[in-house]
Image (tube, rainbow, N blue to C red; front, side):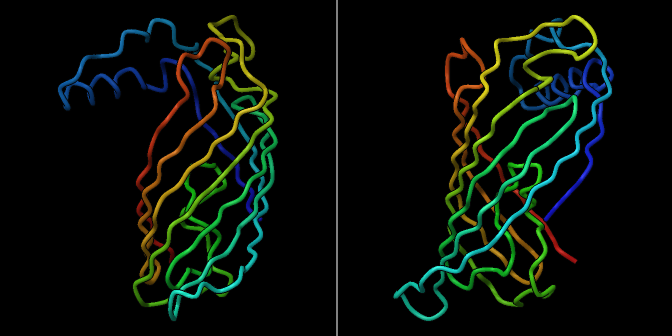
Length: 206
């Protein structure tokens, strides 16, 4: 199980405009022109809870050390940032699978640094591929519904959103390196394209 509290702010005080403009200038691309329509300042809070369970699967006949497993997850979040219920799973296959709870940093509770069941890490190289799926029933999302207590821009949010992703991870000791690509269903009516994005994470467990 994992439970954590997220605190932050949306709106001009978050300084997203300045950070994005500085980065776009650094990499030499055009600046984004939509900042005049950003949300108004609002503190945000979100309580997230999720439970994960790992199920060993039959060994793969590819040689010594090859394994596969399935990690299920389910939970939800409550707050003015976003309120939803979610469930999904991750399938892993590889050599010397780590004794942890997955390699999916996309979800708030899908930490890439999830602790092992034994509290120890194999001091040897290991690698695996993974396929992950997460579905959410969303009651509120401030990034789509707009400010909670003040008038602001908003869109017609969809209630059901799902992600599917795949990637590879390499581990040694407490270190983990994971690269992944994700595909998401449309999040609001009128959205022209389905979101596609990637992630690269480096983590160290102590």
